[in-house]
Image (cartoon, rainbow, N blue to C red; front, side, top):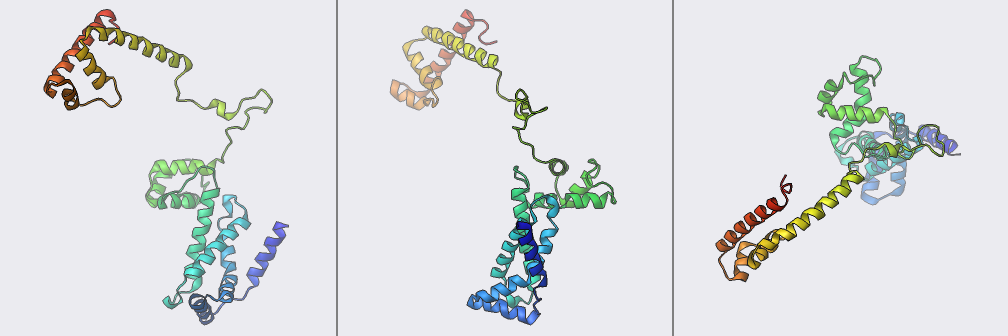
Length: 284
């Protein structure tokens, strides 16, 4: 049903009469000045063949032709809304850019689940890689090897790494991480099972937790060699997320900030000696 409707639409578009330059100007003026919907309709109908022709250029990206035409029509409407007839430019020339931009934006949003082509250079690479490879390779297989990456990167102003990455994306379709490996039986693994995790191994997590607890106990015992004032300084300066300043500690203890610094230095040295004495591996 959809194919039949699309064929009917294409047939109607191809049979629509062309607009002469003077008629096109009058219709565009009526729309711009008086928002004449009939004038807008006649302009867009007369240029639907341009939309279809433009959409056909992008059919090799594997997206439904009907969707490409629909997105191109959105671009055509945008062009009609913005067209300025007094600039003495044919509407088809102006609309071509909007139609192409609308179709390309749709392709970039829907061709892959991984968003690509976010910059103008990346968009140019996405839409021109195959063409440039075929041209530079002299008609040979346009996707055969990375030998032309340097020439393409110079042509489009992108890095060779970007060319290689885009080539890989265009050569390989998206694959689901939940797709089963092997024959897909009940015991087969998914692709996700083969992903390498950056998280620590369970034994590493357990070992780290044990080490943290052991070192905390060592530190707690070592604090016993400090005087009450030294312990307060170390606790507020070193054992809190937001350590107190020398000045604020000096005010609370009734001493100068230089004296606080001296006491802190002495306390740290006493802690180091106590820790190394009782646990030689602590600073290893």
